Amino acid sequence: MSLAYLVKRLVYLLITALVVSIIVFGITQILPANAAQMLLGEFATPEALAAIEARLGLDQPAYRQYLDWIGGVLVGDFGTSLRTGLPVGPTVVDAMSRSLTLAGLSLLMVTIVAIPLGVLAAVYQGRKIDLGVSLTSYIGVSLPEFVLATLLLVWLTRPELGWFPASGYVPFADDPLKALWHLALPVLTLTIVLTAHVMRMVRSEMVDVLHSDYVRAADLRGLPRHSVLFRHALRNSLLPTITVLALDVGYLIGGIIVVEEIFAFPGVGRLLIVAVQQRDLPLIQAGALIMAMTYAFSNLLADFAYAYLDRRIQYD
Amino acid sequence: MIEVLKRLLSHPQGAIGLGLGAILILAMAFGPLVAPYDPESFDYSARLVGPTANHWMGTDQFGRDILSRLLWGARSTVLLGFTATLIGTSLGAAVGILSGFLGGWIDDAIMRVVDATMAIPNLLFALLIVTVLGPSGLNAVIAIGIAFAPGMARIARSVTLATRNHDYVSAAVARGESAAYIMAREILPNMVAPVIVEGTIRVAFAIMLLATLSFLGLGAQPPAPEWGLMIAEARGFMFRNAWTIVWPGLAIATVAIAFNLLGDGLRDVLNPRTR
Image 1 (cartoon, chains in turn yellow, red):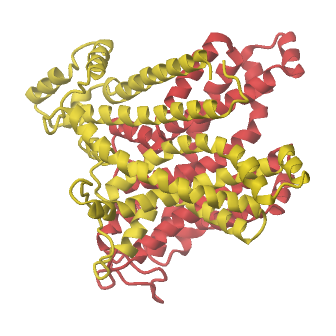
Image 2 (tube, chains in turn orange, purple):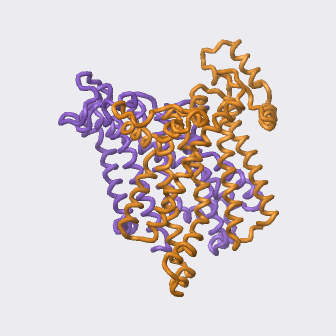
């Protein structure tokens, strides 16, 4: 991986950050003709309107508002919540740490489950297990997270069963077992949905590789089957899987928003939904910016990992 | 057209997708006519009952017939999903063709912005737009349409780049045709196949996103028989009658599966390489 490639990708990340911040701020604060009215509703008193205009700087020109906001963001000041009056930055960072636990556990589960299943389906292409994997992945990609989560709630949290808690959160530091118990259903929901995506991709990559010349050559040389599968085929089909996993972080973020809301998990997704419902602009802006940047950053990491692992390609 | 249908029918995914799609069209066309009950009439003597002879799918917390509500909801659910996809496709195609056709630094600049926009996940983007427009079914459609545009722009641009150097485009340039003519008459037709494939899969996604927004209270508003909203409203009663969740969930999943299968079938059928 050349230094030029590294620098170029970092510059792209900066451009992404700039564009995303302009979009987020533009949509929420600049685009509404009268943001103060939008926030307070049509029955707001003139005094209340004037107060909120002064607080958000709505009387300033658009570029000035953006520069003030982004200037604050760059030094970690995301403004204060319109509803609670607390600084937004620490609130979002706090929620983000809990969401990352949820996301990390889900990605780990997906990697453990989806890759072997995708490989199995490709190796036994056209057989029963392949059909089963394909069918499951069709159902998985067609089932919205909120439907799956609600169905899991109905089945597994019935009061007479009491197998899993329906909602809430316990910090790992307090009680690791209870923490996992509370994380189980949210993680299960996200894992099922994401596994469907990843499984499909791994299968199609693996099918391509299995039909490639070098795998056929290895077969013809008389190498044992497991050696061909693991040393030649799997290694090369796992490279694109890294990219697939990173792209799926986008789905994961969408899923996390929904799942946190349903299971009342105090993460950044739930924070965002509440902020949207209460039209808490600074909170919406901070939450959206952090989520989008997490996605952009995970794609950058995937690109670096890909470039590092795949020596065949010279990036410039 | 007939040729494509024939080939779809001999493709396993395509055939199942087509079959499910046909059932869906029937439900949309005749659903309200054959629905046994009014979708919004309350019946307090029959609340939260399971499937019976009178109510094939049971009733919800107000005694509304679930089957009737699903049948009434089919029309708007699917049409709104289509509309959102159409908005995203037209917007994306316009940006993509323009960018690919103009080329140079303008293309670079537009594509950097498109790429950056794609860092905002669809649901998050839709949430932001609904914040401004306010929660309603129509606004959710607009939001999803806008959120879909960047992905469509990428596809439109790559097709434009692939066709720009073909002889017939050079011929049109040599004839002195206007840029608008070349974009609309020479480049746009090449886009039909890939856009139809991507669009079909996007319809499934749009329907799921719309239902999700309604579920979160940011899309269709009560008492609309919107499938996502039905699940949201029934959540408080799900332990007393799980069917209130199962049926609408099944309806959303079936429609999404139909469009996913159809999209995969179309991709194989329309792709000249696998023909």
